[in-house]
Image 1 (cartoon, rainbow, N blue to C red):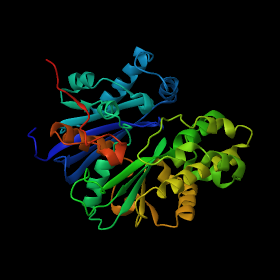
Image 2 (image 1 turned 45 degrees about the horizontal axis):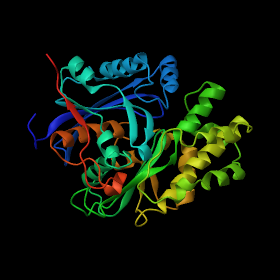
Image 3 (image 1 turned 60 degrees about the vertical axis):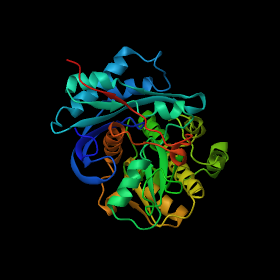
Length: 365
């Protein structure tokens, strides 16, 4: 591939919701998006999901070889069909994230994938940012900026990703580059699908609350919601980020509630954390476009609309793919890494200056 030219880039993303691997192809030069290609989804089996959950919180010296091999094998399998890929962005599986102590762990070796797939792979996107004092997350904001340009947005807007953890990117598309002061502000809003999915799995053996049906029948515990919003995290200025289980005590807090009330309370906590986060933005966004699995939870979306008083819509209303946006982001970031362009900046992760993360691995003979 030639630097500075548009290429076929493929990204693979396995998020903290632990549902499966998203793979998506885009055409990009690392600055603008020229088009979108095919995508695929490889769902984790119940046994694979349980194995991944067993590794949460583990650092490289703690995680088992079998778990790392599972992550690499599943990703290689999901990526095999993308013959046109000129570069691959491999996020790996986040098992632990502690930026205060300059630590983040995405399991999976990109060199292994490069050898298996015989294509260049960019991976380990977060470590450089964390080592330089950044939060290492969220990393999709530079791609969100490119998407705002692609849809020809002309006023500030927000893109809200509701995966395992919620994160928001406030974008002013009138700027030329994402690293310019004032162009972006990004941060994790709070827990999103992770505690709700865990509740559904532990109590009902279901992966998630489909369309928010269970939550819709329950009553929200105002006491638990109030205690949740009193957490110091919500008073910290952005940028800021979370580990999947930072709010692990939330699951304990709803243990005495019935299933419906527990689901309703967790859903209300997700929505309230986003409402709190919007107050940190430089100006109210003209609209909020929602990506990630949470956009399919109609109860959650209704809570967001009521709490924000803004247009809140699935990102599909802008002609984009909310299922594959995170995977697309790492395809885009891979091209930026190869071209020596920054992938994060002070307003997205709190890092001291614009920095390019990622390691490029090429196939060995």
